Length: 582
Image 1: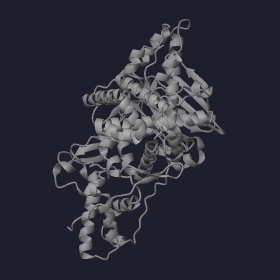
Image 2: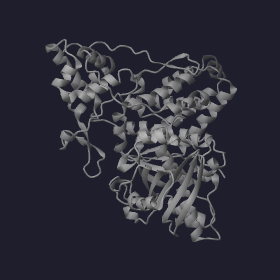
Image 3: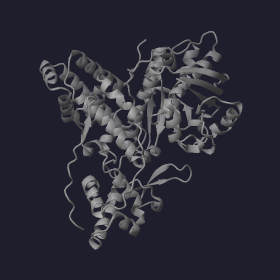
Image 4: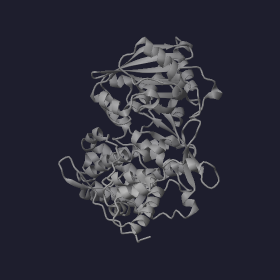
């Protein structure tokens, strides 16, 4: 093997709204797998941008049909008016025995199944939905359907909220701190699965859902609304004269639960150009904010209030997993120390003089990655005018191009320049190649296997980009030693199985943040880092790992209600929600 060249330093920059060139953080820092596992939801997360759009465009949402029996079983249809566009959200509620209710993807029955549909609903369409939506993966729908999902009632909160409402009491806020939702979704499908409209169709024909995952997030938002209406309905049937509805302050604190496993991880690998674009927008927002030096009383007081709110939010967050508990407690301690620093006159004067970039360096140096990434998203809140314009640029053409007539030596140079992190991994060490990713036959869901103790490695999914790059690099070096003037096409004719990784290498050469810098086949891999990274883009909170392979979390907790949107009083201040005090 020939010696590897020294990696070139990339000059990463973005532009301010005025056209000023701003420095960006390095890909080595931003795309480090462990740092990705510290990401927090932000103003650019899809839930936040969706609710802002709903408010700005004055969406209107009303129940067209709400036919539930005394147990809350039946169907509901909501009509959505989003500007000139019309949609329907259809929910089917079925009886489900307690022993059949679980979060696993292998389940075949659920309390609730639902679909988001474009346009009006004919009776024939509704009949088809009644048959196919409850079947989920086993059913088939047409391209009027944008989203398919299912959910279960929470065994910890659903019935207790019903009972309290039926006796004239509000839900127990202390209990909601521990749970945070009435129902929990276990899958949200879109983008062409099971006959639904694919993303290109949604993006071009559904202006309301023109940004990635906004239709899926909206389905979760309406599921949250239905879950509140469902418990109120059951309570009213139980006690017509005594039952009360949920107070708006408490209803806003109720989110929708979510259970997420390894199925989410491959998306981050299969869509590198999209991930690069999302990260670029986020890093551009950060660069814009850190370039500001107007640390005045109003902004500093806002930051102090937000830090205190996050501390309370974390203290109200209940998790069972020891490592996550330690992380939350460590973050509370760091933020408490930061609060003390912000109250010191000398620190205050220094910050006013040096600006937000000095604060970011102070936090990163003193408190580590968790606090660093958290304080960054709090700074986003102070400058919505700098951050929010980026939300319309979250979609990108994802085609991976191939330049076959480029000299192979140039392609090898790209690897050396951009993939030094992968070439530095010693894959001769068994622990660095211990895991393999595969799809289960039963549900076609990703799973992890041990290469040296389990069968099935021959069906490995192409998840380990680091290993694929290293193998490709070794082959190129060997091939060039025999054919020094060869082109990429010559190499691919000799090794056609390298087409995918070569296309990826060439396509991402001009993108800074496309590849996650981690070894996804390492024995000590923490899949939670992958899940948390993607969930942060969605905007979920209350990250609660149940094992190293799956996690519970809460969506839309604190978000404006449908009534708020309908009455044009939806506010965009629901980040890191805390329990209401009535």
